[in-house]
Image (cartoon, rainbow, N blue to C red; front, side, top):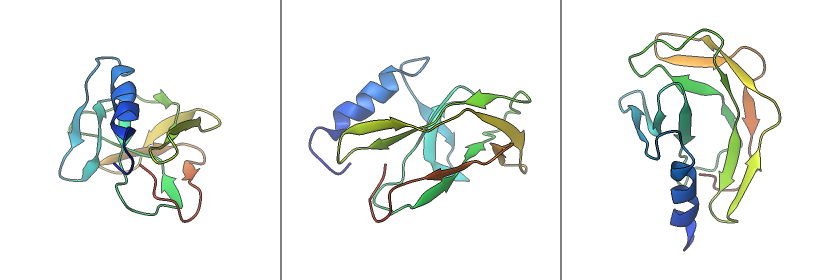
Length: 116
């Protein structure tokens, strides 16, 4: 992570998960996503400068219940902020690896920033 103390924000996120830990969800197709299948996910962009993210939840070898719903937050480990994204994202099966949002699903990130 980019800044001293950023590990604290990650620890807070993990401790807020339903199980207090996360695991790789699909280390082959989506190595930057960890979490608890169908409940809680963390998408890590590393040093990539991402302008937007297309909502995509890995299948991880298990079918997701139809119409599962998720809230999204953008975590900035440099500014040490967590910003909720407006709305709730309801899933639909996109392909054999991923579930996408039924409506919308484009999460915008501030241009030129490195987001995690």
